[in-house]
Image (cartoon, rainbow, N blue to C red; front, side, top):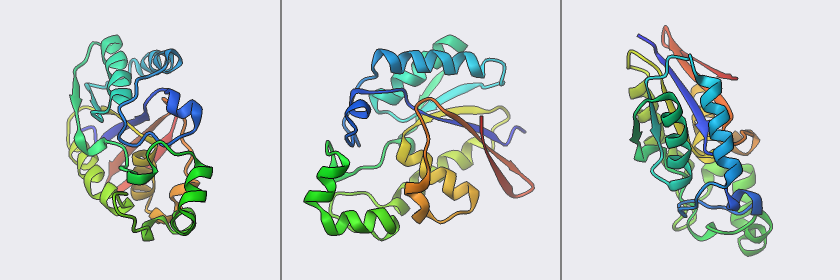
Length: 193
Protein backbone atom coordinates (compact mmCIF):
# COMPACT_ATOMS: atom_id res chain seq x y z
CA UNK A 1 0.00 0.00 0.00
CA UNK A 2 1.15 3.51 -0.77
CA UNK A 3 -0.07 5.27 2.41
CA UNK A 4 0.91 8.45 0.57
CA UNK A 5 -1.00 11.51 -0.63
CA UNK A 6 0.36 14.55 -2.44
CA UNK A 7 -1.20 17.92 -1.78
CA UNK A 8 -1.06 21.20 -3.67
CA UNK A 9 -2.73 24.59 -3.76
CA UNK A 10 -4.49 25.80 -6.91
CA UNK A 11 -2.74 28.16 -9.36
CA UNK A 12 -2.78 31.94 -9.23
CA UNK A 13 -6.06 33.90 -9.57
CA UNK A 14 -7.01 37.57 -9.83
CA UNK A 15 -8.25 37.45 -6.21
CA UNK A 16 -4.77 36.33 -5.16
CA UNK A 17 -3.16 39.17 -7.07
CA UNK A 18 -5.57 41.65 -5.47
CA UNK A 19 -4.96 39.99 -2.07
CA UNK A 20 -8.63 39.53 -1.25
CA UNK A 21 -10.39 36.52 0.23
CA UNK A 22 -12.01 34.50 -2.55
CA UNK A 23 -13.49 31.93 -0.18
CA UNK A 24 -16.32 30.17 -2.02
CA UNK A 25 -16.37 32.67 -4.91
CA UNK A 26 -15.82 30.66 -8.09
CA UNK A 27 -12.93 32.54 -9.71
CA UNK A 28 -10.89 31.20 -12.67
CA UNK A 29 -7.15 30.81 -12.94
CA UNK A 30 -5.04 33.49 -14.52
CA UNK A 31 -2.76 32.41 -17.41
CA UNK A 32 0.11 32.37 -14.87
CA UNK A 33 -1.94 29.99 -12.74
CA UNK A 34 -2.36 27.59 -15.65
CA UNK A 35 1.40 27.76 -16.29
CA UNK A 36 2.03 26.91 -12.63
CA UNK A 37 -0.18 23.84 -13.05
CA UNK A 38 1.71 22.78 -16.18
CA UNK A 39 5.03 23.06 -14.34
CA UNK A 40 3.68 21.06 -11.41
CA UNK A 41 2.43 18.31 -13.75
CA UNK A 42 5.92 18.01 -15.23
CA UNK A 43 7.43 17.98 -11.76
CA UNK A 44 5.26 15.09 -10.50
CA UNK A 45 5.54 12.98 -13.64
CA UNK A 46 6.98 9.67 -12.50
CA UNK A 47 5.65 9.97 -8.91
CA UNK A 48 3.18 7.14 -9.54
CA UNK A 49 0.15 9.37 -9.00
CA UNK A 50 -2.96 7.49 -10.14
CA UNK A 51 -5.55 10.26 -9.98
CA UNK A 52 -6.20 13.87 -9.06
CA UNK A 53 -8.74 14.76 -6.36
CA UNK A 54 -9.93 18.35 -6.30
CA UNK A 55 -12.02 20.94 -4.58
CA UNK A 56 -15.01 21.61 -6.84
CA UNK A 57 -14.25 25.35 -7.02
CA UNK A 58 -13.21 26.47 -10.50
CA UNK A 59 -9.67 27.60 -9.62
CA UNK A 60 -8.87 24.21 -8.10
CA UNK A 61 -10.70 22.19 -10.74
CA UNK A 62 -8.89 24.04 -13.58
CA UNK A 63 -5.56 23.35 -11.87
CA UNK A 64 -6.49 19.68 -11.44
CA UNK A 65 -7.67 19.36 -15.05
CA UNK A 66 -4.37 20.76 -16.42
CA UNK A 67 -2.36 18.32 -14.30
CA UNK A 68 -4.61 15.34 -15.03
CA UNK A 69 -4.57 16.00 -18.77
CA UNK A 70 -0.76 16.20 -18.80
CA UNK A 71 -0.47 12.97 -16.79
CA UNK A 72 -3.43 11.27 -18.53
CA UNK A 73 -5.14 10.34 -15.26
CA UNK A 74 -8.70 10.93 -14.00
CA UNK A 75 -10.01 13.84 -11.91
CA UNK A 76 -12.53 13.42 -9.09
CA UNK A 77 -14.32 16.18 -7.17
CA UNK A 78 -13.86 16.04 -3.39
CA UNK A 79 -16.23 18.51 -1.68
CA UNK A 80 -14.32 18.08 1.58
CA UNK A 81 -11.38 19.93 -0.02
CA UNK A 82 -13.34 23.13 -0.75
CA UNK A 83 -11.95 26.41 0.61
CA UNK A 84 -12.90 27.82 4.00
CA UNK A 85 -16.27 29.59 3.87
CA UNK A 86 -15.27 33.04 5.16
CA UNK A 87 -18.84 34.36 5.06
CA UNK A 88 -18.89 38.15 5.57
CA UNK A 89 -15.16 38.39 4.84
CA UNK A 90 -15.61 37.18 1.25
CA UNK A 91 -14.01 39.60 -1.21
CA UNK A 92 -12.29 41.62 1.51
CA UNK A 93 -8.60 42.32 1.89
CA UNK A 94 -6.71 42.09 5.17
CA UNK A 95 -7.00 45.79 6.05
CA UNK A 96 -10.75 45.77 5.24
CA UNK A 97 -11.34 42.84 7.59
CA UNK A 98 -9.28 44.53 10.30
CA UNK A 99 -11.26 47.79 9.93
CA UNK A 100 -14.75 46.30 9.61
CA UNK A 101 -14.34 43.43 12.11
CA UNK A 102 -11.68 44.63 14.59
CA UNK A 103 -12.58 42.32 17.48
CA UNK A 104 -13.05 39.24 15.32
CA UNK A 105 -9.89 40.03 13.37
CA UNK A 106 -7.88 40.11 16.59
CA UNK A 107 -9.21 36.68 17.56
CA UNK A 108 -8.53 35.35 14.04
CA UNK A 109 -4.91 36.55 14.09
CA UNK A 110 -4.04 35.08 17.51
CA UNK A 111 -6.55 32.30 18.28
CA UNK A 112 -8.29 31.33 15.03
CA UNK A 113 -9.90 28.26 16.60
CA UNK A 114 -11.80 30.63 18.93
CA UNK A 115 -13.36 32.70 16.15
CA UNK A 116 -17.15 32.56 16.22
CA UNK A 117 -18.54 34.72 13.45
CA UNK A 118 -21.92 33.99 11.82
CA UNK A 119 -21.37 32.69 8.30
CA UNK A 120 -17.61 32.08 8.81
CA UNK A 121 -16.73 28.39 8.91
CA UNK A 122 -14.66 27.35 11.92
CA UNK A 123 -11.20 25.87 11.55
CA UNK A 124 -12.40 22.80 13.44
CA UNK A 125 -15.20 22.35 10.87
CA UNK A 126 -12.63 22.52 8.07
CA UNK A 127 -10.58 19.83 9.79
CA UNK A 128 -13.70 17.68 10.30
CA UNK A 129 -14.45 17.63 6.55
CA UNK A 130 -10.91 17.61 5.06
CA UNK A 131 -9.11 15.05 7.23
CA UNK A 132 -11.49 12.17 6.34
CA UNK A 133 -10.73 12.78 2.65
CA UNK A 134 -6.98 12.43 3.23
CA UNK A 135 -7.40 9.47 5.61
CA UNK A 136 -9.46 7.65 2.96
CA UNK A 137 -6.89 8.37 0.24
CA UNK A 138 -4.07 7.13 2.47
CA UNK A 139 -5.73 3.69 2.29
CA UNK A 140 -5.37 3.43 -1.50
CA UNK A 141 -2.73 1.33 -3.23
CA UNK A 142 -1.36 4.26 -5.25
CA UNK A 143 -0.93 7.92 -4.35
CA UNK A 144 -3.41 10.62 -5.29
CA UNK A 145 -2.71 14.30 -5.83
CA UNK A 146 -5.16 16.61 -4.03
CA UNK A 147 -5.72 20.13 -5.37
CA UNK A 148 -7.16 22.42 -2.72
CA UNK A 149 -6.84 25.88 -1.17
CA UNK A 150 -4.56 27.69 1.26
CA UNK A 151 -6.97 27.44 4.20
CA UNK A 152 -7.38 23.70 3.78
CA UNK A 153 -3.64 23.15 3.23
CA UNK A 154 -2.89 25.01 6.46
CA UNK A 155 -5.34 22.88 8.43
CA UNK A 156 -4.02 19.62 6.95
CA UNK A 157 -0.37 20.51 7.56
CA UNK A 158 -1.09 21.36 11.19
CA UNK A 159 -3.29 18.31 11.76
CA UNK A 160 -0.89 15.75 10.30
CA UNK A 161 2.13 17.43 11.92
CA UNK A 162 0.44 17.18 15.33
CA UNK A 163 0.48 20.96 15.79
CA UNK A 164 -2.19 23.30 17.15
CA UNK A 165 -4.67 24.71 14.65
CA UNK A 166 -4.03 28.09 16.30
CA UNK A 167 -0.76 28.14 14.31
CA UNK A 168 -2.91 28.54 11.18
CA UNK A 169 -1.54 31.98 10.26
CA UNK A 170 2.07 30.81 10.53
CA UNK A 171 1.74 28.40 7.59
CA UNK A 172 2.87 29.83 4.26
CA UNK A 173 2.23 27.79 1.12
CA UNK A 174 2.48 29.08 -2.43
CA UNK A 175 0.45 28.34 -5.54
CA UNK A 176 1.16 24.87 -6.97
CA UNK A 177 3.66 24.19 -4.21
CA UNK A 178 3.83 20.50 -3.34
CA UNK A 179 3.84 18.50 -0.16
CA UNK A 180 3.31 14.88 0.75
CA UNK A 181 1.56 13.26 3.67
CA UNK A 182 2.81 9.74 4.40
CA UNK A 183 1.45 7.40 7.04
CA UNK A 184 3.75 4.76 8.43
CA UNK A 185 3.29 2.68 11.58
CA UNK A 186 0.54 4.97 12.86
CA UNK A 187 2.50 8.19 12.55
CA UNK A 188 2.59 10.82 9.81
CA UNK A 189 5.36 12.51 7.91
CA UNK A 190 4.57 15.82 6.18
CA UNK A 191 7.23 16.87 3.70
CA UNK A 192 7.55 19.86 1.34
CA UNK A 193 9.08 19.31 -2.09
